[in-house]
Structures are given as C-alpha cells and as structure tokens.
Length: 321
Image (cartoon, rainbow, N blue to C red; front, side):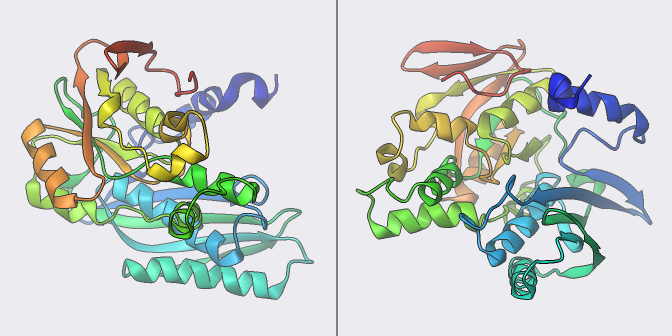
C-alpha cells in the first residue's frame, strides 16, 4: 500500500500512536516546563511544492517559512521565543539565495521580537526549509481545538481567499487585467508576506474568555471549521453573508467563495468562544474580523446561503463548490 492510497488523514493515524499522549492534535505541542508551558511546532516548506522561483523570491520564502510557524504559535495562544532552521540545499544553490532567505526570516521574526537560535544545513536534491518554533503560554491561556461548546460564536480574524488570489496572479500574468495596481499588490503580498495573528493573543488574554477553541486557517477556512467541530464534538451553522469576500477576487474567478473557503495559506485564526466575548474581540481586532456563525449540539456543519442549507460532513474539507 502506498501513501497516496491512505492520504494525509490515514498517514496521521499511522504515526499518532507513536507520539506522547496529549501532545498531538493541535497546531502545536504544549509541554509543561518549570512552571510554564513550552509550545513547540514544526513546519517544512519544499521547493516546487510550497514555493517556486516563479511566485516567491528567496526573501519571501524566508518570510513565509517564519510566518507559518508563528501562526501555529498564535493558534495556541503562545508568544514566540525563537526558531531553529533546518536547510536542505542542492550544491548548485546560489549563495545569494541563501542570504536572501535568511534576510526574509529575520525580517519576519524581528517584527515579533524574536529570532533564530540554531539549526542545521545539509545536502539535498531539492531546496527544503524546515522550521521548528518555540513559544510560551500560561496554562489558563492555552487554545486547543477540542474546547468549543455548543452555542459558541465562530470568529475569523480577517479576510480569506487573498493568498490564493495572489498565487493565481503570480502564476498567470494575464489574469486580473482589470485590477488596479493597489488591489493587485495587496493580493500578491497576502501570498508572499502573510501576517501571523500574534496580535490577537494579548487581546484574548485581556478578555479572559470562559472558553476558547481555535486554530489557524493555513489549510483553508472550511477545513479549520471542520477540524474544530470534529475535535470538539460539535456542529456549526455558518452564515455565508457574514463571510467577507475581498473585492479583488470577483474579477479573478467566477466562484470567489471557493477561494475564500478552500484557498488556504491565509494564516488567520478561527476561534470559537462565548458570544459576548466574541463580540468584544471582533471590536478590538477591527478590520475584517467577524462572527461568521455558531457551533451547534448536532454534528452537522451547515453553510446557510441565501436561505438554502448546504450540509457537509465534519470529516471533509470544503471542496464541493
């Protein structure tokens, strides 16, 4: 049997029994350490899978590598301590590419008061960037996927679909001819320079919600909702009209909602928390933060669109539009 036959879900079920109990299943592992909680996450970016010279400069690869891991820390309610970098390189890699990669890493990390604390370099047939990020969080502030209660408000911290739109613009230079320059730059920057939502962590700490479940939306908005529901044993009703669609998407695809729900790599947070706290949080975040639905006691996930209900399994990623 090959990996392609069991897919990612099957592969994870294969390896989970070998992991320490209680350490897997969220965006990062939380380890008790000297009265605090150490948060650890690892992410790997591979050339021609997660980035390419056509769509991302070396600096952009560095930024995105750091941002992806910082986003996982934010999804756990943690603030960063540092990262290590494992770098696999073919011998013919340009030295300038490596220098620019680290420049992008440092630029992203500096924005959040952290930096590189070590790593490894090795020979490889393909350029690979493996990041391990470390953070810390108080026990009372840890965000997990399984903490949602029925009747919770579902909050998104910003727009979705922009990274997918930016990628498509970079892949097809003839796409989006009607976009003005600023809109085009916004979408491309969303793909090349995503912003991890570490700014939300102190806001949540200030509000001290009765409960909060959450994760980031790196694999897509609908996937995040489905995973939160599955982990918490709840369902959801999502209001299509409450989901923001960036105006620039309308000129790029006939079904922009597809990119919003399933595009991925937006690195926003999706949170489930009590309605009063959710309303206060949305106000504090501002921008495109919004309450887009609520959790339910029944396991179904419903997308309510113009009075019609689309029923999806909590085990499925959104890919039906």
